[in-house]
Image 1: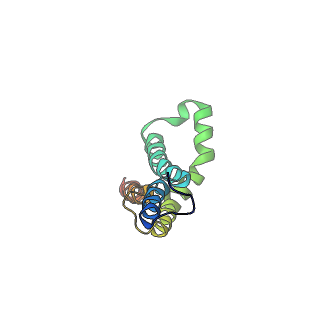
Image 2: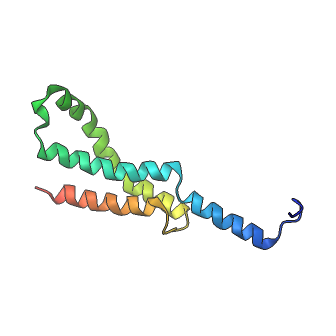
Image 3: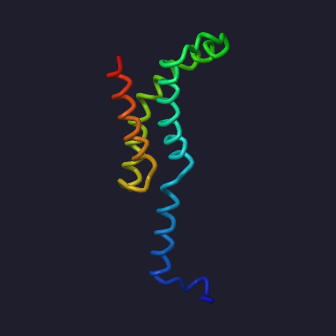
Length: 112
């Protein structure tokens, strides 16, 4: 076992590699990724199902549609900024959140 005060440069590189992998899956990136999946699904579900058949479901949908719409358009910007802060890490969930959000916006805007 090494003395704690004698850490080699290779040990520091291994530690920084481990930290970069764990930093790519932060709590915020998981939330952004989950929102990028949940919001388009909820939006499509609201368009394909008669949500006003049950009054409670219709009321909940009416309450959350505006925040959902705002998050849908703010999420790609948020994801892009944090992906840039992660130094364009391809393992980051921000990248996939950004891609899913752009595709979702494209599908929602062009859907008639």
